[in-house]
Figure 1 (cartoon, helix red, strand yellow):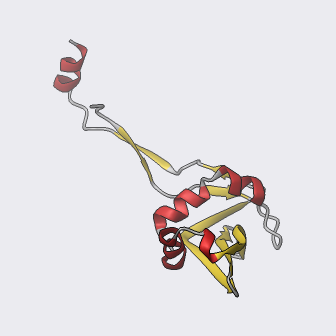
Figure 2 (cartoon, one colour):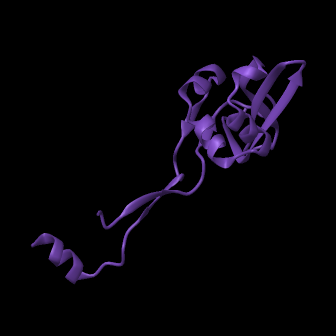
Length: 126
């Protein structure tokens, strides 16, 4: 086992231009989906917020998708804003391509290391 590990501290920022203030960063914040039903068709969006002016925008996850085409567990995750589903959706390359954004991982990770003890490292070196 490695004596260190990398931990995610937050979701990455999105490099996405704001239509109001022209800032180039947005965040998912706590992670929220918006689900809209139109008959038997659903629209699902991931809500993002500009880090400068706080304007909320939507990234299309599903557009006019038949309800029956969505996995019931995933659909429930959209309704309850499941944080694991938010993270998985955010890192989906197809969503980034459709939404025309890239991810900025700066400051989103932390390296955790054990307290430095010469004895432990000396044992590993031997």
